[in-house]
Length: 433
Image (cartoon, rainbow, N blue to C red; front, side):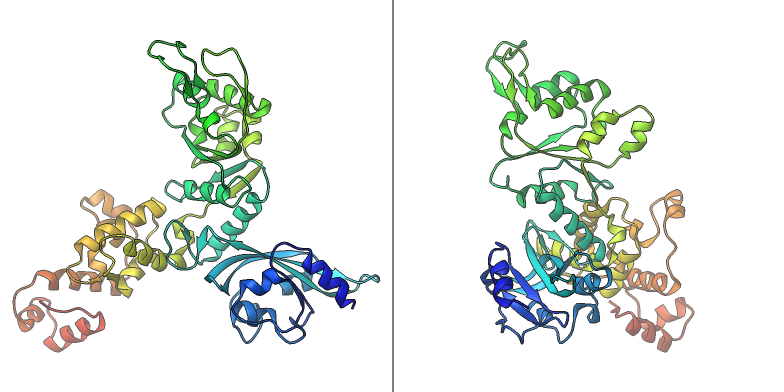
């Protein structure tokens, strides 16, 4: 192994990088990698998992996918998103691992290159995407790949799944990060408003146009334009949008001179655009122009292991930061399907915190739809059925909040012994007023 040649290769990489042998030992490292971690790197002794994770063994022995293991099994480069212990705390890193071969084609080691992900966090942080689930990590990997290119990105996901936040992440991690990020709401735009909003207009172009106005395309010059709910753009306007994307030119309403457009395109829709194409509701040529790199945003029900963390995060951001969800409340939330996704969770957190009489937010403080019942019978039928233990707990919590009599009387009304009542209250950590 030519260590000086490998070290020169590592030094030429502008991102944190190391060369490791198949036994995970670091044989070459650049300064960017050394600066990333608190743990000192000793060539020939330090292992990658000890430096990045403070683990005593490889990642796949501690609940994570190991890119080196993948490389060994496939003999091809692999990538994963991991949480590393860096100088900035627990930080998301997108890891690219490549086999390095000698002249005879034998693998002598592996090149590991890191991309630190600044737009996401494994802990509660303001203005960042929060999560730890595998679905969330997979999303970060797609975002990171998209941000390294100028390719048009199409975000597809249910309403409330955070498409604008992802669009911002694509922008902020791209080379256009210092330029504007402009959002164009496609829902409800009629044809005349669509053109004037996008392309601007000249003075006197129409009644009321007393001054010239820049369009959003010009405002976004050099940056990113995010077309939110692009599936709502009517067919007649889709033609004009396609022309803009194909020619990179536009003309303000009432103007004669063409202007050049320079922007990164990100679009989003909760609709199935391919299905709309088949029905003739969305132009096929426009679809393939905007869907260069599709990214699926997982629904919240696909990120069940993130729910507790997100609840803590949204509580800490509001006026009820001193409160906390009980384990039983979190369990009930994890069973819920969240048709409104993240947006609905934020609302549920605020409602539940208001309903809680003390610092503990109980399962009975959650909105009716979460608990499987509702104000009307027709709504109740459509909700998930609760397990008996959870239903008993919710029922007892509701009673004990308002019951003013003695424990003996309550036990008699419930047709159980006082001892059984106390045992159940203790089991569910419920206090009788």
